[in-house]
Image 1 (cartoon, protein in one colour):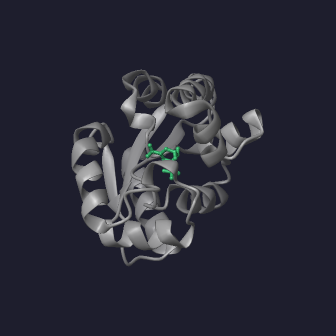
Image 2 (cartoon, rainbow, N blue to C red; image 1 turned 135 degrees about the vertical axis):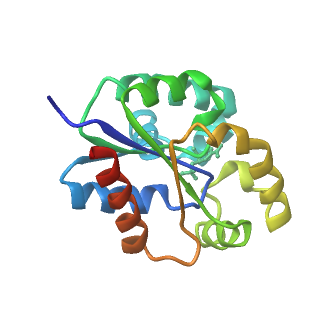
Length: 173
Ligand code: S3P
């Protein structure tokens, strides 16, 4: 039997893509970044997609992809921050493996998203730590679907990956 998937959820800028890629390397698992995959499928960057087709269409692409990935195994999946907005995504992905939530402080999130300006359509107008904090509070109950949470502020990628590896060892026992 193949291995279960590892699904990383969390707000924008919490490190899902960077950590997920490195985790997959360490575990010799396949890695997929949902935003990147949607960009590949649609031929548009996430920002351009939002601009052209709007959020509702983006969520629909996300839903179709989540359902598809839930059929696969042995994958580390970095989700987009809004994947939790649709309960069916969580149900589908959750049934395919273990959901781990990455977290960071609003200040750290702001720093990280500022380094990649223009790539987060939902944060174009809301660019201070308080605004981010407000969206985080709203989404908090949704991210609570994760079985484990890992705090990434002030840590480097290897530290975060090591923490996840420890969680996975516990799970195996
Ligand atoms: C979103 C997060 C983004 C991307 C889109 C919407 C969200 O992914 O899917 O901009 O609603 O939180 P990242 O979490 O990878 O930035």
